[in-house]
Image 1 (cartoon, rainbow, N blue to C red):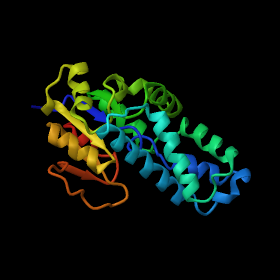
Image 2: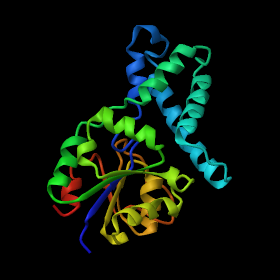
Image 3: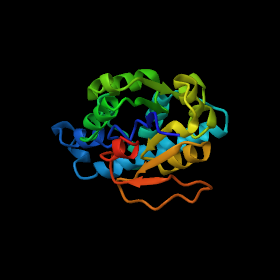
Length: 228
């Protein structure tokens, strides 16, 4: 069947998760991370994701904001800057104002102009997603933000992917699912979606039972990939 619905992961896919550390690093009060912010951002993101997986398999769900804070606390300690509460507060505040990648507004606009359903499907809590979408100014080109909070478990549990069909009434093969996380794109492919992995960093393919059908360097060609 033809693609009718384009669904996007949020953090790292539409929104640049390194933006918070990058912004803080150029501010005079936080010169201690001027040169090390990429490592801080990477540690933060990796722990954030790892904690979602651990909580999912141990039936210890909590909202993504708590996981985000826990990941940051680990990263700050790892980097030797855990004794700076002002830095922690600033980084967390900036996470509510993450920048969208440059191609995102035009890409989503093209999808809506072509008659596509558009949605976010994210581990993020509803309030976090609302803040990110508002900050990026893309609310008018998204039909809905679907959050794992409605099912109480993180990706890649199939109950999360079920949310798309439940909302739009579409078949699995009508969905193009896009994620910057290789494991997420693979999980969605195993579920039955057509998937695109946005591999901005040129990482190797994850060794999993499923693989995404498409691997892209950015989001520019998503409208063409959807059939527009």
